[in-house]
Image (cartoon, rainbow, N blue to C red):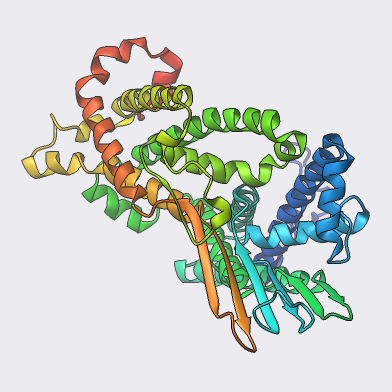
Length: 440
């Protein structure tokens, strides 16, 4: 008799089919797969960026487009043809991972060259594409950890490193395959983005972003964060406040930069904003907070505004008002986001109260250091075979920007302890609930 109550089969010798499990892949393949997918997504974003750039030149008129074609024609590619859409995105993807495009000219026939062999290189991160690569690696690492959890921290680092090495291998290989070469009677030219910096950048980004995603997939917090929070109370809310402050500031100034580019530079410059806007917005963040943009050895960048005083009077005033308003808003946000149990009035000892003053300045100083490092643009020349020597130049936020931002962090901290409590009631309830930590 069949047991229909419990759903058992009527014939005991008939076994129920086993539950289907998801297809299991080796851990090494998941690590390699993360690198391949991340590179593909970065390349796709670069292709979209290149398409926008070409569209901007088309809308800007044939004169601008022909000028761009003439500069690229020396390397055997026309930017309004399919070759550009197939080749130049690989260069952008390589630069997003830290690659440095290098143009090597080997020619005794070029009389203006300082030596028979000259290499020109430029280094700049297209930060939007770099963010796509980092976010992809993080998400793919998190997904891999949730699908097949690893048993130890050592294994997470091992497979994250494999992701970084795989990312470096595929990016270097494809960069070499799409390198541009031209041989003429006067000499030879070779353009490639395969460089030592590409290897280093891809390995570092792939390893650390992949590990961060895997660690998040475990649902645990790294030990170093826990140890840091013991010394610096509220460091995670401070990171959120600093990140929000930066994003709001650069969103406002970035909008103004795009409008200015459209008015003064035309559609070609405006449509190229995915390439230059994140870096320019980082520069504006430093300028607006009384840092400077320094230029060393790059005469082409000498006309860029070096400080807020180099802007028109109305622009300087607008930037100053924006900076002060957002500093006040950050003070209120920090007042709401800070862990009240570790606030200065509740900390049990004077040393703890003094330490609580350091959290926000240190976090804002870290943000200033990141702006200085990620916002720098480098270019150089290396000559071999006689004469010329080696030289390079840089332009970007001043190295001491981290000190300026640390001072702003201290000012925002002071504002949260004096002014913020009097205007807290003006913050909408939903925003206040979002900013406040759980349990407050």
